[in-house]
Length: 214
Picture 1 (cartoon, helix red, strand yellow):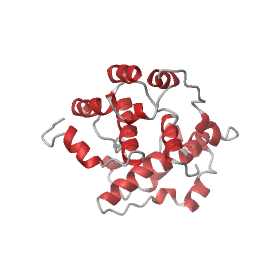
Picture 2 (picture 1 turned 180 degrees about the vertical axis):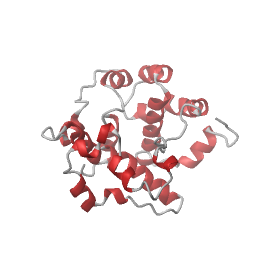
Picture 3 (picture 1 turned 135 degrees about the vertical axis):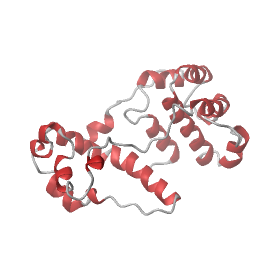
């Protein structure tokens, strides 16, 4: 997607598929909010592809660049680690993406060809291990996160810039799960940093003491 001014970028954050539903946004804003919840998927959709390839094509153009790869890149740079993604090499993708799905997913086994190619080089325990993501334990940390987020959201920039109304935010704080609350908190901190020009370090130190534990 092309670069956007700050206010438009935040509006984009609220309209990404899978983030907030239309009823949730309408409740937050205190008015009817109309938008096409699937606009991003429709933009990149390739209905002529087989179902599996179609889903992968959408992943290549949405989830990978806007989520997984972006987070890995930023987290690795923060730790001074250089990350490579060899399976996203253009030559490999150009060749592999044209293969029929039934050859790639033999007996519905994911990464079947890759596992067979590496069977003599890697231990079986690694090849059969469950997939592990890079998420952090929001559920376990939700108490300090809610304690940190509540005062910021009750009197914050989301209300100031019209993305929420006081009654809608109060309802959201009582009803939204920790995943949606985290998205609201990130939007709030983003607004404070980039539209208000507010320093976040003193804010975090004031509202989240170092002794706070999950």
